[in-house]
Image (cartoon, rainbow, N blue to C red; front, side):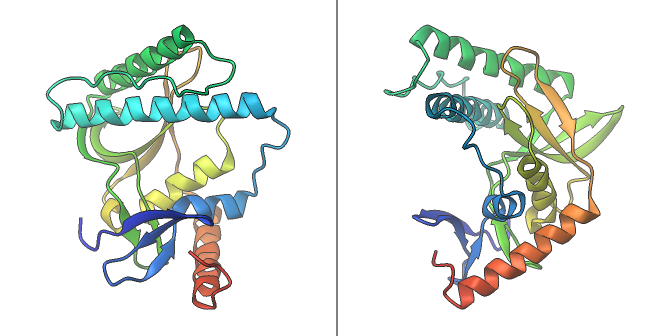
Length: 225
């Protein structure tokens, strides 16, 4: 994709550096700033387990997407359990990752998915932020072939920031041809659900405004990437 930015992390979060060296905020940081979501009510071990399981399932899903795209000759081995994954046995971890793999494969088959790009970063040059959608693809939706963008999530419930992120992704230069946006919801104890997130004018306006604020804060060195 043209004008491809490079994602990087610092102590203040995730950022994107454009080819000209200019740094812009990430879609995730914009969504978090808007939603102000907090997980203080969740026990630390439960939260750590959820994060690690989510990261593992995300790796499984993206590896399978790359396999279908032709980057791998065979399905990759399941990711090993992290050394410190609370409230989880190795058998439980393997069962969770196996379930995630079956869920993604079922979604691909059900919607006749043809991957186009996996975790390909792009910039929203109009409003100044970067993002890295999980997958851009062609699929069959309501008996029509559509170009869409998906975000894989393994969570107990979808939140505002998840919905906002899909709105962000459709605004990226490299994804403006995506007619629809979806969350591929890899539910813990059930089949996966493909949830369409339709365009939302209020979300769009909030993203534009927050991106403007954060870019001003970067230029005035209030935010330091």
